[in-house]
Image (cartoon, rainbow, N blue to C red; front, side, top):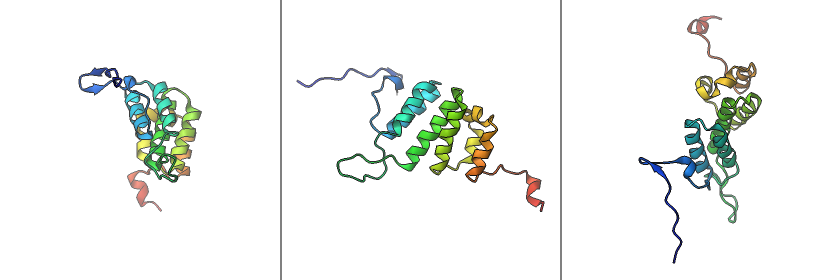
Length: 149
């Protein structure tokens, strides 16, 4: 007869994220990583975000015998969340590298980066604003600055 999988532990109606099986797509790894970030389990979350960069994604399927590539939005989400995890773990240099990767991939939500509490440790670095400005995220000026010439 067929084998039966053991039940997955639940709390209420939500699955317990760490009880889930290893994700097989980038989107699943990112979703599980975000849940772990909400629980402040940054080491485990970072591992999932890094795995997402190697897993099949929703991008272009270039060859019949290979899975679809990771999409650009999945790459951005994984790199941005790696930057958040690195910042929360106190690894500022690695966080800046991951954030630069997200920016190079096209992420341009500069207000989000300037206000995300998970990036607060990175914002304390003198390199943070320079990195954003390098990719077109000039620091917003005050209201009166608009009228000066």
